[in-house]
Amino acid sequence: MNKPSDATKIVLKRSKKYLFIRFLCSLIYRAIAMITPILFSTAVNEVTNGKYNNALLISIGAIFTVILFRIFDIFNTYTWHKLYNSMYDTYTKIGINKVFDNSLYSLSRFNIGEFLNIMSTDINVMSDFYCNLIMRLIRIFEVLIIFVYFFMIDLYIGLAGVFMALIAISVIFLSSKKIEKLNKTKSVNLDNRNTIINEFLLSIREIKAFNIFAPMRKRIDESTQIYSKSYLKQRVGEDTFKFSVLAMIEAFRWLMFIYGIYLITQGKMEIGTLLIIYNYYTQLVDGFSEFATINTGIRQLKVSENRFYQLIIYSREKLMREQKYKLENLNIKFNEVVYGDKQNPRLKGVTFELKDNSINVITGMVGSGKSGVMDLLLKLNTQHSGTITIGDISITDIDFDYYYNLVSCIDKSDRFLNMSIKENLNIVNDSFEEVVYICKQLNIHDEILKLKYGYDTILNSNEDTLKTNTKILLNIARILLKNTRIMIFDDILSSLDNESREKVIDILNQIKEEHTIIIIDKNDQTIKMSNHIVLLNEGKVSETGEYQKISKNRIYKKMKKNQ
Image (tube, rainbow, N blue to C red):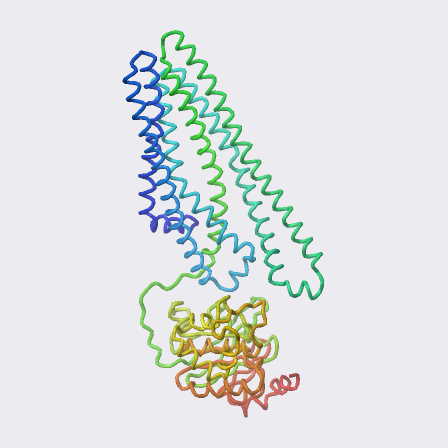
């Protein structure tokens, strides 16, 4: 996807069935709307000429036309929603997939408010615009037909209509840039407001603990006022241009009505024809209103597509080719890897190996580069130079789907989905028997059963339903249930009590023959139980080997002393 419209092309292609139905329905719907004034005026002319039976039959036909019009009105609304749902769903899937494909650095470009607005408001703007575009284009074609009809009636009526249209279009286009600027400002202000609202929700404990509700409310009030003013300015700006155009068309309608009366007095026009002109000018008002709305919508669309495209432009393309990976072993090798800020990298040309069928520990003091290793192992970012391989294959050559079925990671945070314990574990492994088995291994099964709702207890980050130690063990249960070939435990075992930590290490020793296990930790007891250790210091490898060798290193001694 090289430009904003590429995502839209995919969305339109996947929604082509509903697009066709929408087009067909809208065409019939507006055709009936064009015919109705003609039937009405013909009935009036027949009455004027004393042909009452003809007028009655035409009126009955008009009644059926009106009923048909309303039926298609309902069906038209139904097809609009089917098309909208299809497009909204596809845009959402593209956005979510591209977020997953983004690196951490790329995602850091977005604040939470901006991301939420892109995935809700901007997707809504894009879906709404293309759903309405079919009807709006038909309405513009309808306006052209009306102008042709005006020329057929009278040259001056046709010329007046064209003159009015040129003025209206000029006003609409002159307003384009200003409307786009107002929309952009409004979107940015909404992003900021939603970010602050989100902070308020996520920080409610700290707000109460430090009694900082007043300053937080002030921030929310200020951001709300700024957004409200920009929203008001945007709506007033759009409506001012739109209503000025509509007022001009209304004025032309009455001028043409007066001119039509003059033609009737000269015997050059029938009353029914004058009624058609009046009714068609009503449709011109609606048509130019749609035209003005298209112009406004295009400006909104341009802003939303550019914002949505930011999720795409920074994402990494998946390797689409089919490839069979021959991974005879899962040894992971870092070779002269440089990563982080180019001026002061977090990893400064590190070279080490993490061995298959063993427990590997990566350790070091704060700022040693452990988090950089994690970013790279999870393909959250890429290195500036050097290579990282699994077996003999560079991890950059392994597509995401395969890679994330090979590697899994947990850290000490207790980020669970707002679902039950059972659902949180079953989303990783759908076998409840396996869930119970792992929970029993971790000695948390009985504790879960003691809860009021057992495994159906909802895990909510704002509630202390479970002990911290139990939550950590539930997190560990997820990686054991996933059972990938490579398991990464990022600074999580040190948060457990001694008994639980020893239990987890015992389980890892039982399964290590079929896995590459990587533990990020500074705890001496955990490091002692490992098979291979990588000691980092200030972005460089200080030592590698077994515990007896590492324990003699001065950096390790210093780290142990500071614990």
